[in-house]
Structure formats: structure tokens, C-alpha cells
Image (cartoon, rainbow, N blue to C red; front, top):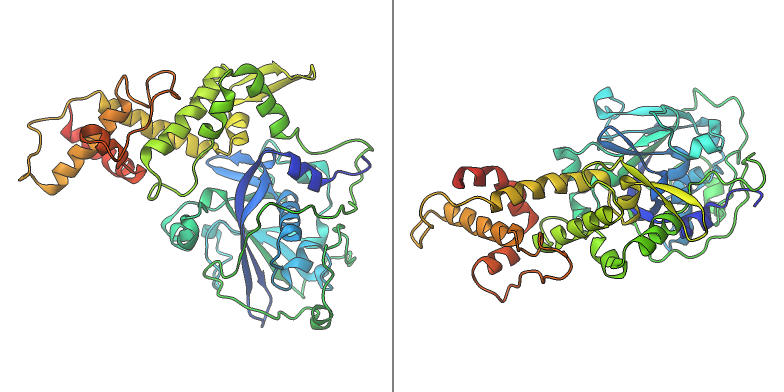
Length: 432
């Protein structure tokens, strides 16, 4: 192909669902703010910088273009024209990002992780600008939000549908008429918008027609199964036939799993992480997804405790492909922070399950808090016992606990992950 086709790439790739909040700031005008959730994003375009996931501005912009083109809900003006490089005042727009939900007058503070990337028109599409580099790149990298109390409060309205800070990115477009880009060439970013600006938008020029509260995700845009956007020309100067995008995960990891894992048909749906969080989903089902994912890694002779470890496999087409543990979990919809956190938490639970309760079993007249801890302990003991549903092999063959049961099984069925995260440390004082 003469130029990379991101639309085809994103449809053929194993994707992670991310979210993004876009803020447009212009002097003496109301702030425009719009949030986008459930954006399909190629897992291969995510990298890690310390504890944070990271991608590039171009990768995020292209995914947003694809998402907006497929959505029945149009973007707020002027977000669409900015993303497509068609805004008449593009020469005055700077791209920035922040890692904290502070959009007040102090939003540029260093402690927020605020960082300017450069003029919108200064970005040229290339292999280097699309793929995350091996190390931090101050021009291209966009880091996800920092988990914090403020971040939790900011995303709380969307937490029940799986929006989390570790997969949430913030983009700012800042109008700065005092510092225009030297090459004032509208449309330099290429890829014209699938919907041309309306006559009203063209007449409005740089003025902003709508405003929303910058302290929340003021406008929500989602999309169901993406429709096929039209193919757009790209300004890329890459050689003919060269694609800057990594091999789609579903044609590498999944094809490897199909060959290497006899029980892959059963494993694949089980190993997919459940969305909805620790407050609504049962702990047994959340933990089963983790152990099924762990089973996949072990079946591929990869170490679940070292996701950087890799192994070479021969694909059905005869090509040798080296795959890391991180690539495998990303292909199934995990991210390594969540996977590692669960690995550590469930290891502590397994240790508690091997211990005995100190003292007598709490009776009806016992302290309510102690009784709750004891029931949590009984549930953990049931799940992580040597012959329990999460530790017996194969992990797929033993049914999860039922709410219709009694005793330890009932205690296990009622557990939520919040019980485990809150009680693990305290339970160590009640067990021996």
C-alpha cells in the first residue's frame, strides 16, 4: 500500500478500550470540554513509562479520528476541526497534556504533570511519531492520568462502566495568538474530516460556540461497533509497501494460542478481564479471569511474574514471532498494572487461606466487625484452598461458588474484591 491505512489497522488489531478528555482553551472565551469513552485503541501502540501507560499524540489523534467518524454523535465545535487539522486558526493552536484533572487557572502547574508538546502544525506523521519509542519522548508521548483521590472523584461518574485513570488520557488544545507557528498551512496534518465544517462553523472562525464545565467530563461520546470510515490520504513519506504499525495482536498472539493451547476455545472468554470494577463484580469471577490469563501464559511457557519475558513461536504461515508476556495479556484486554496488582493481591489471599483462624469461631454475640472478617476469611479459604476452584487444576473444570449454597461456599460467593483489598492486611492479625 502506498500509505499506511490506520482504519484497516485498527479494525484488524487487538484493541484496548481507552478514554480521553479533550479541553480547548482560548483567551476570553468559554472552555470547550468533551469526554470520549470506549475508544478502541491498538494495544501495540501502548507503552509503559514507569507505572504509567503511554502512547503518542499521533496514535491518540488517529484513534480519535476513527472513533469520531464512526460515532453518530458529532464532536463539540471546534474539537473536530482541530483533530483533523482543518481549523482556520490552526497556526495558533498548541498541543498540551496533563496528568491531573485540574482545568482551573492553575492547570499549567508543574505538579499536575502539565506539558506542552508543541504547535499543532509542527507535527509530521512518521514511523517515529506513531510508535512509542523505547524511552520517554517529550515531543510525542502522552501519559495516562496519575491515580489519585482527585482522579477517582473526577472519573467517579464513569467508574461503573469501566473508565479508569490508568487508561484515561487528557489532551489540551490552547489558542495562543501571540505565538503562531511559522508555517501557517491549514490542513498540514492531512486526513480531511469525514464531515466538513458547517457554514456556521466556518462563519464562527475561531470563536467557540459551546461551553461546558471543565471540572467534569461534560459531554459523553461513545460508539458501538465502529462503522467503516472512508479511506483518507496520508501525508506520510514512508516507502511504498511499508507500514509503521506493529503486527496486529489478533494475528500473532491469538494464532499462537490457538496452536499452543488445546483448551484455548474455553480459555479465551474466561481470560478476558471483566469490566465494571471491584464493587459490582463478584471476586470469584474476577479472580477466575486472572487465573485463566495466568493459565494462558503458563501454557505458552511464559512467566506470569515476569511479563517482560518472551518466547519465540512459529506462526501458521511459517514466520518466527517473538512474543512477550506483556503482549499476550494486552491481546486479551489486560494491562500489566492491573495484572500485577491482582497477582500480588491474590498471592496474599492464598497465604491467608493456608492459615488457621486465631481463637474461637465468632458466635452470634461476637463483634460485628470480627464476624465480617471471619466470613471474609471463610470465603478466601474456600476459594484458595488446595482443592479450591481457583487453585485446583485444571482451573476451568471446577464450578465457582453459588449464592444458593451455605457455609464457606456462600461466604465465597458473596465476596467482592473490595472485601479482599480492605481486609487482607487486617486478616493477618486474626490468623496464624
